[in-house]
Length: 287
Image (tube, rainbow, N blue to C red):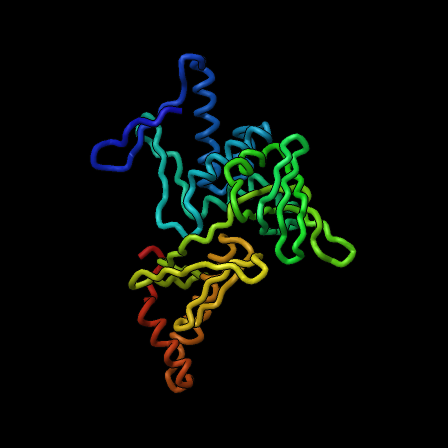
């Protein structure tokens, strides 16, 4: 893949696929598969994604590459793609990561998985085992991964990492091993910007920038954000789950406090109402 310089005055980046060692039909087939996978992601159609590239190992690698191109759940940008005839064939936005993950990991396996955070201490590429130091038990834990996850491991091999897979417990009920690892990520504690909150039919727009600073709890297993003035105290095991939990909590606070009659609130609750009204406004979806 060759990326040219952006077109003057915009962010559009011309991309060419191929090279002197690739036959034209291979280039056409690769582009066709990529386009169908992007269309499947945009349509939230995992069957279309699978049909575009039947080879599971290769499909997972391509999906992980596309996942790397996609915005996080709390990002404020999206990526649209056009072909050489200037026809748009897909968009990667904050909802894309969820459908990509669904296409990579079967529902049953995903429901049985847990997220564990630990300090990376060793990688055994021969046996496909990554060892992490698990803070709650102060012991090392082996995590057995598949080949498709190896590139993720190479990219996220420093500091605290989050490993997702099936957790095996010891006799005391504490995690001792993770098998069937399907995801490995560096722990992301970068500032979380809140712009638009959507909960069901409720849509709130921040009047001014609201940025929360994620931290970990004492076990380093939960990512937490809080704002005492607004009444926010949300936590989850992953950043994606945290964004969802945060939206739900802000939506609840809006309904319970911002829309409540003044006579129904004590002094502290009234202050929270005023703070919420100062930061957010309710808008119609798409406004």
